[in-house]
Image (cartoon, rainbow, N blue to C red; front, side):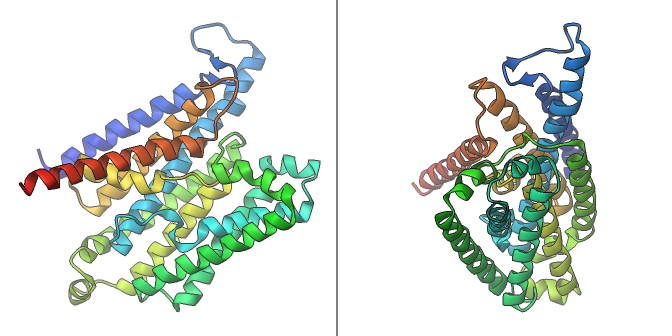
Length: 336
């Protein structure tokens, strides 16, 4: 069986798992499981499933897919297995945007309803995009990968410090930002799903187009340039993919940890394939991981709901720790 056929089968399996977790999410309510398909449902129950649970589950899958795709692009572009979607400062920028938004409105009752509108979402997205633009300005473009990484770290630290200072000056901001900082899919609407779906399609199309560039970069930048690869254009487009995917996801589901970092590692543990397939598989794995974590967050301690970012950190972090332990154990065994 060829690598392409194997990758296609894995992609089909992951897509089925994603569909199953989304449907499973429609049965996960605030009071635990509610199998709406096995019992007659009234109009209120159907409205809850259609207007609340289904867009939430679908939004979790789309948000996880965006983060998984951004993580795979980041690790391929920077040739660093520890790269994640927040590497260019987008997370700190989104946090500062949300903090400034809460501070400006003073935690009023109208602010609480902004989760379901464009106010808070727009603030997070604008903050993430402006942080990436600042990173690009400090790095003087995308030509130097190391300089871009360092600029992203500096921007993330500075904007994170500004967010902390804002929280100290106005304590109500910190309390209001907890849902965003820990990640939440509770307020994802159909309009948010449409926005994330459009962002997913655009980012996947662009990343797939430049996937051969990522394949060439595995041989080194000098070799890639000698092969005639348009590195400058590819870096610019792929950085734009990371920024758009991360910004769209963070704006609607908050700061969800480890999905973008762990998804590409899961792909590499499953099969060896070109970047074109690994990008798609990472997106599908990220979607399945986040939608499953969202279901567990609702039912594990119902009616108390856990922040979805806490579960993704436990699941993704636990998986990466297991990988490190396994690789270390194999290395020690091989050296004897």
